[in-house]
Image (cartoon, rainbow, N blue to C red; front, side, top):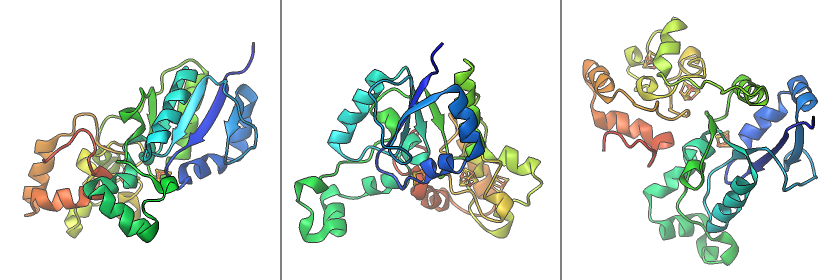
Length: 250
Ligand code: SF4
Ligand code: SF4
Ligand code: SF4
């Protein structure tokens, strides 16, 4: 039986999530034993239009990228969005808070109207094509990547946590960042990172996106308990939560 074919593609991003895959080192070799990587610009020169699993890093910020993504989708049996840029639009969606022409002038100055610098409002991958699985985070967690890909190669459906970071944070025995006067987004953000930031002394910035049904009322209770307002929370949600679905506190 032939091995499943995997192709990895990048759109607007810093390529940090692909770097996480490169850093898998020996585990990559294990994966190569059971699957063929047929296209991956960051690591090889070969290209192919035939693949079973397409892994998409980055968000869609140009009209032509949307068309490219649709072609990839039409060829792939399974499509995975890789990292926050792809799953929620990531930091690239900050742009959507401003007038597009102003943003272009700010970044490109006098060259803003050159055709090769054309840009559009940022979209996450699922806002352009159907996405089968999402690997969250900025950057992704290497173990989670391996788990998702291995599960798919074994014909299993990977289980991605749909509960808040607070669950993992409490289990880790951390003192809540709110006790330090910090606005932590853990109550509304999807777990799976092992509460990486609170466990390292930082608040959660929200890189894994919201849980499917964020408990907005519970988060409000936390805010009130610490004499802060929804505005304080919204301010912290801008980095990864700009124009993200579901829209909350709007
Ligand atoms: S999710 Fe973060 S690390 Fe990954 S490509 Fe986007 S900006 Fe880079
Ligand atoms: S709010 Fe943040 S620091 Fe507090 S328990 Fe939740 S994840 Fe941990
Ligand atoms: S704690 Fe929050 S910001 Fe940090 S990795 Fe986890 S989801 Fe991302």
